[in-house]
Image 1 (cartoon, rainbow, N blue to C red):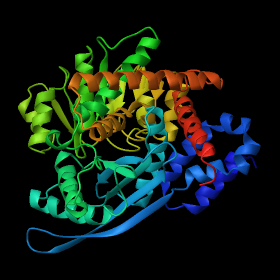
Image 2 (image 1 turned 60 degrees about the vertical axis):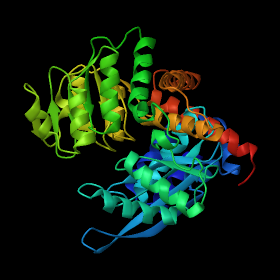
Image 3 (image 1 turned 90 degrees about the horizontal axis):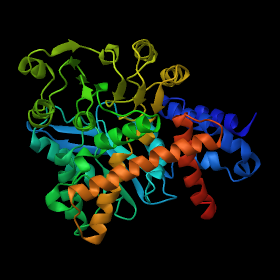
Length: 444
């Protein structure tokens, strides 16, 4: 048995109840085979794959808080500090009922390579809770966030571990958590990113993941002699990533005709009205049924269905494993040219293989959605320097980072005989950087 298969077997046996984590590990290890095989004896002696698939540490803790009726509620909090070979642990905090240790480990593992691809000094980590912010009052959310941070504050710091937002964790939640951290530690430091602009946040951070997704998509098309003008895009999700991906796509001359949430989806043949979508999702925190009611010509459908709409470009921006093999077949049949992931691992392994086997350009989330964490790292820099950069300054840096990521993953694929395979390229480019740092620092 070769080294990759040996480690895969160990990871599968040890983490059998964590399918998302196993999926992420399998995807990475399978695609870095050429690198490992070229260094197999040395990597095995140094236990590189065992060290990179085992978190440095992981925390699980009780979060008790009081709801508006006076009832004590109990949730579970998590933080996985996966790898800090190239910088402080960096990764968001997901608040969603589906959260459990396996989800956090999968996200933290992906974050190692995503963060390495940015070229910035940040390691990989992730956290969150099974708390659901939906339907909660501001006071209840504050109570939860304060309790959550009371425990989490023991393990994080500006040069140790710097969490950020994620699904369910926006500016409101980050604000409450930062206030509690400051109260406990009696100091102001850049321990969280995604903060409000009045207390150390960065301009362009809100837009960064969605904008970055379109910058790398645009560079992908340019490298193949094409551009975004006139392209028809289908987008899943209706949160931060989807909204700003749609906005930037429209600015670049494309037209996005779909979006979705957990109950249904919208088809708007005239193009999604970003201002209306923002009003419904960011202000009212309502369902997409209100979009269809306010927008003549738009159709609302229950359940799933965005991938059935013919398009040039598909941008999955919702959650993991939302684009499945049947969806991939529809995209291919309808002439889709490119799939670029705005969410973390939104395409199943089977669907990814089918898309690539049928000639669709596919950029994985660890490369395509790295704009968010890249801009979080820029926020960390501004906090350390006690400076605030303009929107245009941050946006230009973001654009450059995403263009560089595209060419780095493209070059990595070519070096190992996998030209056009951006999954292999992304995993190899991230892996090589992290491993170089690990080896330089000895066994630790």
